Image (cartoon, rainbow, N blue to C red):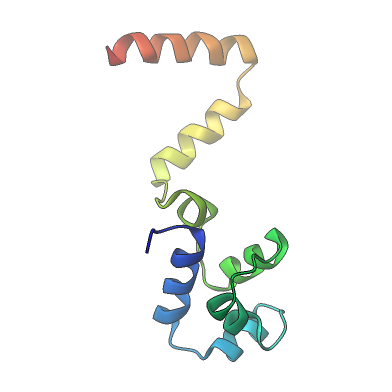
Length: 100
């Protein structure tokens, strides 16, 4: 089976130690939510997926991209978000030039 957000989420459920029912309830979802996620092909709403991910302490980056950001990566992104657009463009050009 190809790994995707659903397989990563269910792996976290399996590694949690609580029952599917207990995790569903702790996330504020219906009692059968995890069981239905596991056993049916339907995709739940993003809001429900996020509630479950928060309960399981999964980062959105890991859940949807399959990798976590380091603390340094998070700090860098935070700094980049605060820069004006022209500064971002200049920095990106410099980084790309340095990469080659």
